[in-house]
Length: 74
Image 1 (tube, helix red, strand yellow):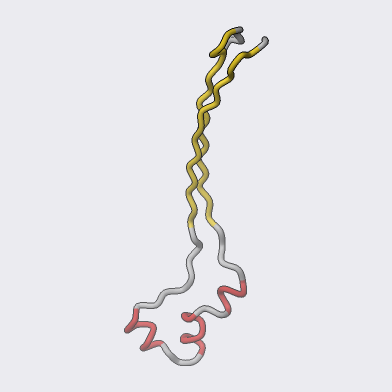
Image 2 (cartoon, rainbow, N blue to C red):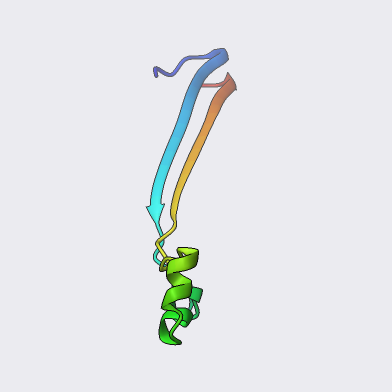
């Protein structure tokens, strides 16, 4: 974008994307229902209710914006 003088001197379109994975903390893992049942002989309950170990939650973020400069003096 070239610098100009004027009322509508510049427009920028901004966009960001983020994709992240956060591992469960040790506390989350130790006190999970799956770990409790597995430790205390609840394998049949795990199978019956299809309980799985904790997985890392994935996060996606989208961010967008428009920047407009008015009355730019140069």
